Length: 267
Image 1 (cartoon, one colour):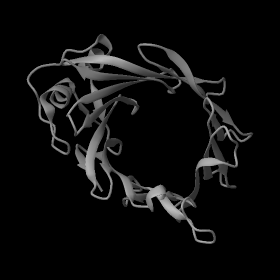
Image 2 (cartoon, one colour):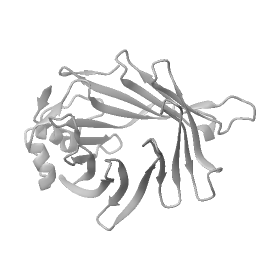
Image 3 (cartoon, rainbow, N blue to C red):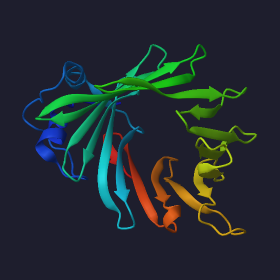
Image 4 (cartoon, rainbow, N blue to C red):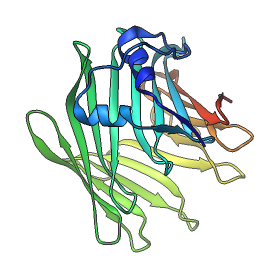
């Protein structure tokens, strides 16, 4: 497992202003940060082979690069630090991930760069039931803290409902306990879905696509709204999202990179 001391790297990302897709160069000084950010930056961050390194986010059929997000880990292989870099104004955002003794993620604390300092702006808090399943999520910002979602499971322990204020996520499963349908429904009722996706898997049991009937004439086959592509190691390397309401042009594309023995495996 490779390790890196990354406080110099983060300064290069957040303050020096690097371009997307460019290799990160070392900077000369440590950034000024809040204590909790500084504690992570002063520690040792890990880049284990096979773990996700970066996601590049592209927009529309012209595949314009919008931003990327980089991942770093602790010695247990848990995500503890993520960095977001936007192309429009080269601002940077960092997120610290916290865990409990059981290894469950309990927090995501996000900071933005303001006047060359890390400024906290939001936290997601996760709570679990006695069986260790996620049960609630709260969002907190400088002005308030509120319950955002509750999670509900079927008798097999599979997530079947995420309840928001007036909207819900609903999940259906097949006999192999794979998700085969996802519905995002509003206050009108379950028969009036905002989004309704059916899941398709390849012969290696990997998610291949999500299809929908939105914008499709009656009797016509459903079309892909999401497609997923893998490399020879089974790692997800590309995700494409299409725009049903506009005739299914490419809307977004994500490209995934992974750590591999000190070098990046992109596809």
